[in-house]
Image 1: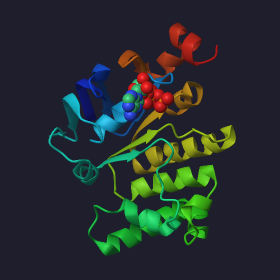
Image 2: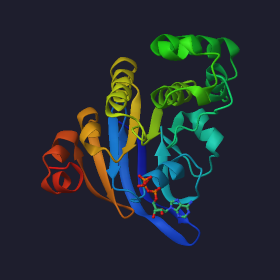
Image 3: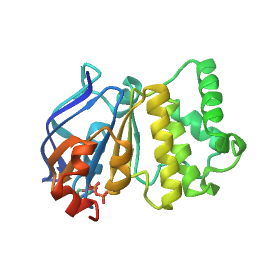
Length: 236
Ligand code: ATP
């Protein structure tokens, strides 16, 4: 079953369209990669899906049409967006960042329980719960951004370029976290990345974007053996 279906999605900045009738779907319980070079339109897709950018076309999420929904309502429905550059509040403590992630949740007991749950999954955040987010390392900030998004109890976690600015070993740790969220919690995850090599090791299916269109799609192993993808994105 698809948790997200996108049909003929167009969006852009001012009068210029950057996305040209994009079609794709995300199956529940899977990790899906959205790959492509710099400027292909990947971030624009995530911004349109989370309602930060006006768009045309159909976005069906968890059986609902999102057209009329505000960004906050989309979070409430279970769509979480971790922006490029993490978007954590540098002057806030780790704990206050987590609390901010739960802005759609009214039940205080649930918020406390979820915080403890993610502290035990991310012990490094627990140790630093009173520390200012801005003083964390890049990898820790990505972890915090992830935990903050999880505080909204998402059905779909969308993460924009998690590897940006991180050393390869740290990036791999972040991807291992995605994998365990998927394996152990059944979390559906959409990852936007330029690092196709690594992402295809973790994703089930993938789409490749070029100039605002999806040009290739398939299972991760199909893409890994696709010659055009190998030449353009896998450094083969
Ligand atoms: P990257 O990996 O570099 O983030 P991307 O695939 O996510 O690339 P987008 O950020 O979606 O690409 O950008 C797609 C196109 O839209 C690019 O040509 C970019 O210059 C343009 N663009 C992005 N943001 C804006 C903006 N705020 N105003 C005008 N044009 C923009």
